[in-house]
Length: 303
Image (cartoon, rainbow, N blue to C red; front, side):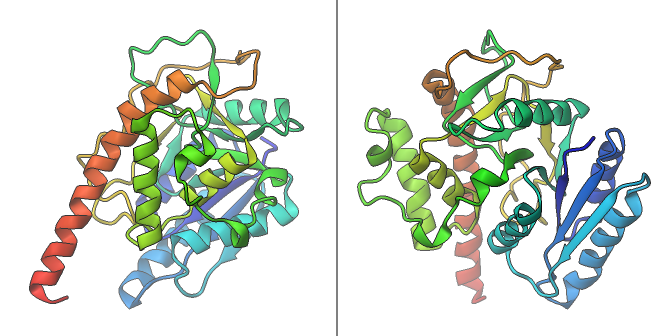
């Protein structure tokens, strides 16, 4: 496979080992290993093991670029600076974190979409995730969405390099400023999310990227089947710590080339609403509950 693959590493070597087994099936010709550094001495060994697992798991001939941080940058800064570095040298790339494990079809799908929409300014990214209900009927192999799912995704330098984080700001009028015709449930959801971002309760990179997406009027490509499974839910995760969260990863049937899509490049608001109800609101309910419990306990014990 000629499309470069970017792997973000941190401190879970077992997940890295499994990811490299899947990569071996497609044997990318170029791999970027981008690693964050440890937060403290207790993480140092795990971070080193994750890097060793990645380097030792690449058993086929390929060009390897390493971009390792000596200290902990945090998820947001590590992702953003890592992709900045990658897209200074690459025109397009497939992006995976250590706990996002793809099917072989994921790579075929991303390569096909990267090529087909390479010069289409309306399309900003390709996701490997589908969070539609299993019963949802689709007439195509993918659809266009206003949502960018990043548990395995791909994009072009033309999109990422246009992302000016210094100019980013959530509009004062909120979501309705971007989508005046949005339903109230969707508007309220995104206003809550970005309110939590503004207060510091949420510290992640993807919401800023998504809202920049909207400001440019872009859409994302979403496959009709889920092609990447996030196996990283648990107490050692950065954000997705609740193992009981309902992720909405139900649609995992085979998706085969040639991939047929809609004729018009336009977000499918009906399908986006289904994802909102089936995935985003379900996930928000669980992920917002446990952080509140942890903060309450921390205050009580004085930590």
